[in-house]
Image (cartoon, rainbow, N blue to C red; front, side):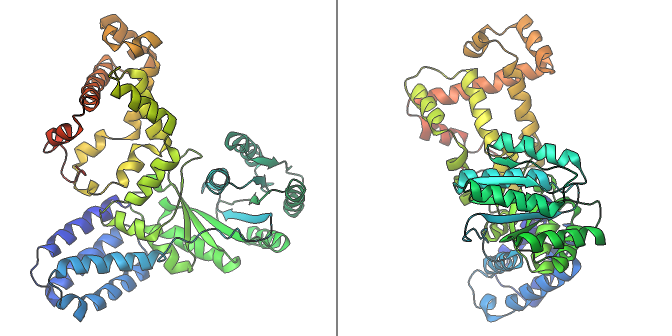
Length: 452
């Protein structure tokens, strides 16, 4: 998300940092660039106008003029205003209510609402250690009930069955009753979506809200709809007392206009971001961290949290001990590393949080993507256990068989084996205590902006 905006702002910031003194003219030029960058990112025009005015007022004041590094001060002002625009701080779910705390999900059809219910229940279960019950009050799309039932089994939470012949209020009341009986901490209720906002839908959802009185009413919206996302959120907010927004499909949205517009237009905080298709792909929204990412400074805190939560420590320690003993690094280990990376949201998600990635050439970025990672794993899966443990046996006819089995070309198998050999050499150096020497050797060969 924010790829084009980050690139444009990075170029503007670079120009400003080179200025010994900021004048009204170069501030005006910089603001014009920032304005264009925001509009191209599909940020709503009223939001852009207010943002530029706030930055300009602070930039022409004493705060910048008296500074020894005016360019850096202006960058800090832009960052501060971005944070303010998106909500200053992370707004957590209000779960202090007497159990069960009820969360109601609202949104248009196709926004990813049902999947988000599963993602949120998994997040509550694993991060907040809550027992969760979920149910579907979507009586218009029978597949929605079956879908949620399947997802509940996948993430390991309780599911309250419902039927298209029932009234949504009766479904919600039944789910609440069961939650009280089994002492569940949280109940999440999925509601019906429509392809557009209509009066009948609003009447029904208001009736449901009045009946269950949820502590959280979250609006789920597709970030790829840009400004429309903010306008739809406002329409729902006018009808319902929303407590927050969940932005979905942010991994496919290179512009990010919705994230910058929603808080300003609705006054409601973004509480979560959907960052992929998997049920683990949900992140709390931190405005300060997002502002840092927009300005190309990365998001190291989120990166550390991801590693702590998603990496299998036992597996990592086992590999470390193996490497230290000089027992070698094989393709089983390589596959395990690829899987660990996918558990952390994929390579794209990790790179997005690394400082300096805006300076990495597009050709390099395109080589480092999740599709390529999945292809590598498919090739390794196509090998026999013996081949994975002893890659040196993989020659001509074996390569052909592996390529056919994984739906790839022999060249792809050769490329994988070459990458693996390079990683094997790296691991060997690490086992001999040559980490510092290895990092020095890599310096200069890495793309500009990589954190080495």
